[in-house]
Each structure stands twice: as structure tokens, then as C-alpha cells.
Length: 163
Image (cartoon, rainbow, N blue to C red; front, top):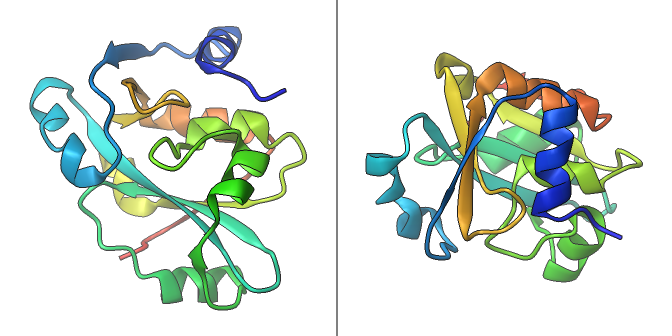
């Protein structure tokens, strides 16, 4: 069974990762979440769940206003042409729905089946914000702790410029 927000937050606590979660109205797009920048400090993210024709899957974590060069990301990963993964595949692999894609959902990828790409530009920020498995809240933590969480989920993030 996929982890929910409660299990995710408990995992952060187990890892000794401090975080702050803020409740808000559901947001489904970066555009809808722009107002959160004024009230929640730190870098805000957009997260792209992508797949190629061979079934290889990637999660790209970038600053919310970054224009991601998907062709370049595919090339760096050695993948074919990338497109957005289906809602069904997203649910199966990460246990979340569209609009709630987050690196925190890696808690549900126990077999480390996908590649994780983190935009190098995020490392310039002390803190980063992502959804805690649902789009009705935002969780802020230290950027280094995000990388530590990703590694604790069995993934070694590829940190590269994605724009």
C-alpha cells in the first residue's frame, strides 16, 4: 500500500529531517501555486513525471519557474524521447495523482525503478518546497535534506542543469 502524508512525515522524522508543512487550497499547476511564493519561503518546485517508449521513467525536480529542456534531460539519461507519463503509471509507481507529483513520492518507489534528476539551480537555495504526497499542502525542508531523503529512498539523484 502506498505511503500517505502521515507515513511520509513519520519517515522524515525517522531520518531526523526537520520540516514545516503549510495547508492550502488544492493547486494543480505551477501557475495556481504562484501565490504561495509570497507566504512560504524557499524555492518552490515543479516536478515532471516522464517516460520514454522503452518504459524508462524519470522524475525531474526543478525550480517552479525553470523551463526544463526535456530533450537535454533525455540525452543526459541515455533515454529516448520523453513525454509525460500516464496518470495510471504515476499512480502505480509513485502512489500519487497528477497535480501531486513530488520527490517525496519516492517513498513509494521501493524498487528504485525510476531515475531522479534534480535541477542544479535548486542547490543555490537553503530551503525547498514540495507537496507532501497531496496538493493541499506544501512541505518545506533544507535542500540538502531533500537530497538526503531521495537517497534514503534508494535513489541517487542526478544533479544537472535542466534548462
